[in-house]
Image (cartoon, rainbow, N blue to C red; front, side):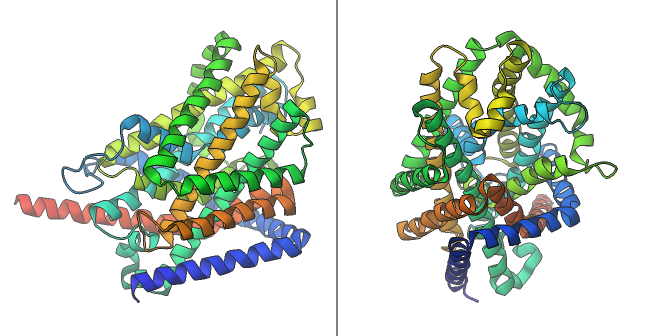
Length: 502
């Protein structure tokens, strides 16, 4: 089958299936929530172990590549230079990889774990340590290990082997001639759907938190209607950004996001409980590294596993669903870097930053509860977790100004993530084009925004989680094939190099 014809087929089938889903959710949102919720429960009960083993296995592969003999292989022709400066590269991969989620969960997740820890009693010093330790776990090495392996495989095959930037093409060493047939088309469609629902989940979280911020600062009703209006407004903005291309819109917005995120970070670091934060960070990070093997393989088989299902398994599914989006985007901006540089940059630097972010935001929230009797639990139960960040910021001077900056930051993260996703979806459905047509990006921009709206309408935050979990399941197998293909090609390249030396 002609690759270009196959790609057209991928676009047509993916759009048709996405529109059917949107139609289902628009006509019968309660039925959609019921069916997908039941499927999610069955999936986690039967295959939760698969998410755990896959996420841990991908991380182990990434760590091994740092010290392997393949570390000096460039992701491009011999002598190729990186396309983007180091700081811009970090900003772009970070904004694409986490973005809205960090702002949404920075206070909310540690606070939730503090009052409902995986083991033991809530509200205690032990619960406080576990709250930050598990936040590190969910946002640290595991998600970035997944992104590392997917992004590296795509970058290697696209820039060093000269194949189209498609998952089917990167899987060719395993799939063989089937990579350009129906099986390859199926692989690409799976990647498209994982991207749509993975990103829709994040966009939904962003809309919910922007709505919560508007309620907290301006007393705008925090309702589904407000959230849908936010999605509509930001959709227009990110579609305008998408027309400017990778080197302008996404690059400039990513740099702006980093400046705003660091502004919030330093605000709480220096005006908040600085000594507490700087004391907690190394201690908790040490506990995280020490307990990483145990946490990585824990499914709580001998006790209630609800907490693991609601948190760890959801996160592993969400990161896997995000992997085609983040992996494709990171691959696109990483041409010219070596395998070792890629792993160190994509795996270690963002993981450390995420850990410090949660220490500052989550640690500040926990300190307010432990030492200043600020009841974030009451806020969480009465106003929702999306308001927790603004409640914490309000405890310090210029809190309202910082809340406005936070709302703006969430909006720019929303734009950057959606803009990046339209680029990736365009690439996946135009034979791996590095500059997909604007009409294709526009189509996918509308679909992913409508998907976020439908998921919110049919199930709120629970609906967002369900979408990510369901989309991730088939993509686990795609990543496994992708990694086997990468390692097989590395081995063949090594043999060729050795034979040339002889």
